Image 1 (cartoon, rainbow, N blue to C red):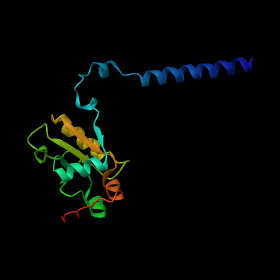
Image 2: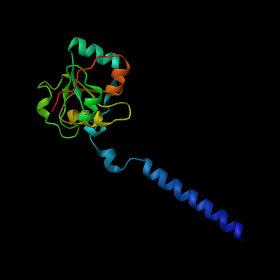
Image 3: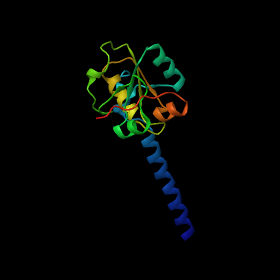
Length: 153
C-alpha cells in the first residue's frame, strides 16, 4: 500500500508541475489581446560592432550610450555617441526630431540590458528604426575600435 501511495504522490506531483508549467508558459488573455504594435512586443533589432563602425563613419545613425559614469570612465564611449543621463528615464529631447532616423543604443556588454530598456523607451515614443549593439562598449573595444574619453562631470 505504501508503494501505491508513493506512486500516486509522484504522479500527482508530476500532474501539478505540468499544469503549472503549461499555465505559466501560455500567454494570458490580456497578453493575447495586446495590440500588435505595442512597444513591449517590439523586437529590437541587434547590430554588430562592424555595422555600428560603418554607421559612425557614415554619420548615418544616432549612437546612444546607456552606460553609467563608472563604465564610461573605465571603457570610454563610442566617438560621437549621445550620453544618456539614465537608461530608463532619459529626456526624449536627446533623440532626433525625425522619428524615422536610425537609433543605435549600447551599454556595457552582452549581459547588460540597459540598452534594451533605453531602446524600448525610444520605440515607445514612436521611433521606428531602433536597434541595440549587443556587444556593448566592451565588444567595441575588443574589436579594436577607438573610443573617446568620457566627459568629466
